Image (cartoon, rainbow, N blue to C red):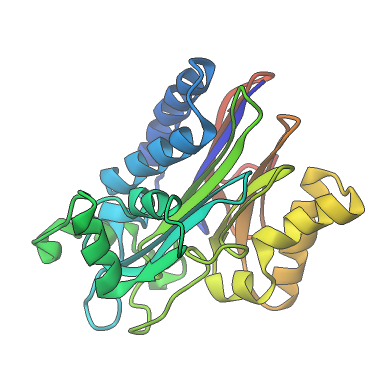
Length: 288
């Protein structure tokens, strides 16, 4: 039994054409399916899915990162497994794959998160690819700007259940467009942007401040553990909290039974899913 969901961010604008993202996610979800069927771990599949989304420039993560108000490109990522191991980077400048750096930190015995220059130095020491010409590398964000910048945020993420029953979740972002210098959203925060335990794996996308205020990813997991709430209802309950505070976004989740759930309260959410009982699907604006 296996399951996999990927997302390319909540809040797509109805006036934009997302055919490139749909095609890419369709190819990517099939690749992830083959990896899981071949016995690849949930952790490695989550990393592989997010790395490809970081590298392509089609989403507001990695190469598609948006600049802050000072023109800097600072990236966030986190990853977690069902055995409570986690790693994260916050406001890391000019690296190719922040999710892979977060994964390396997952194996550190003394700390979970690094930020800014310290995170970049750690990445260099551990053989991760740095971007030396950030101004030219990070140009794809211009394709993500919508009329009036109504949809100025976007995040990528993946959640997976592998054949051994292990769960993993990961999230990566280049941040909101022209965000305040020093601003960090929910993506690198374990329990807000990412969560995995023995029951469920969750990745968040949306206006990060509201996901932080509600500890959204962990809130889903808590509902499942303490109240035995069904997966889709737990996601909806967390999104309802966010909406009451004035926020919007989406959540994806896979549980240890191979069930999948994808919920959003924005215009849409770029997403794709597959499982041992579900053929690959790709959606943007359609509800489940």
